[in-house]
Length: 357
Figure 1 (cartoon, one colour):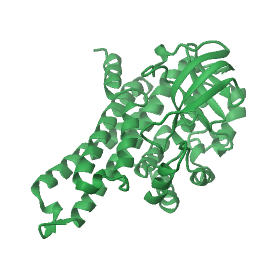
Figure 2 (figure 1 turned 90 degrees about the vertical axis):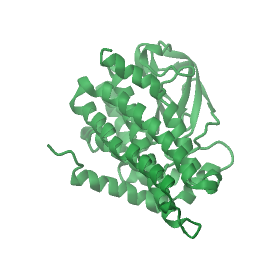
Figure 3 (figure 1 turned 180 degrees about the horizontal axis):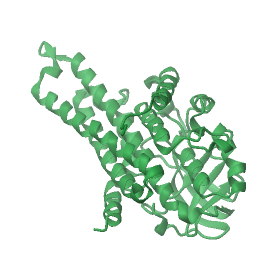
């Protein structure tokens, strides 16, 4: 059995990495992060990402997509996480997945080609209150939705929302009766909104009830992949800084205490790649294990990412605390990854329930 990425998958990662290298260096991310007013996303980068087929990865071929699997989308999420790319990738990808697995033939034919090309920007509205991420916590109901969803990615810019309801999943278009308020969250590279629905017209996804758990699982995998990419970048960034920075006439990489810290960061990060790879593979190929694997991956990698960013700040000494340095971008992304879709504790409890504890 081959446990490595295929040549095609490596080429996909290289293509995304080259795009980010050309159009999304650290200075560009800082500029987006520091732009006055409500943070949005890098429109120029999103257009380029759409032109190279990024949103089409998991769309079936009959609807204008590449017809690939979740692991292919996840390795792209890892690459984006390495660059803390300011893109609406997460919400858009999950909206696409929701329609692909829960929509009617008519809904798929109408929306998937537009989502694959990026002509329509999608997102998902899942959370209610402070921590109501799971389907059994959703209370909105009916074909005219009234209520509030929180922590919705790019709701203000989205043309189409997939909303989690008590009956399953439903589509809400841009001109429906709802208002958005941008949250001043830590991570301004991935803006979040509070959405208030006031009798908003909603069209149910026929298989939405059955698709809710799979949508949560896909979200957990993408968050885990993003977290791995960010954590790995922080490890590499810390190692390179330790080789370059001198103190007492020698590189600080020679100090035993820092060496141990860098090794611990690497050992915590690198082996966890397999967690999200397996969870993504299970989503397509081993459905009875997918939910357990997805929650385990989200829980472990969200915790790991947050700790690695803390260690990265320490490894960089005084400059690690400054606004101008990159470390705060990664720490703030790690904070949102830790909280979005539920805390690691919540997902460990879910995994325990699924395992029959």
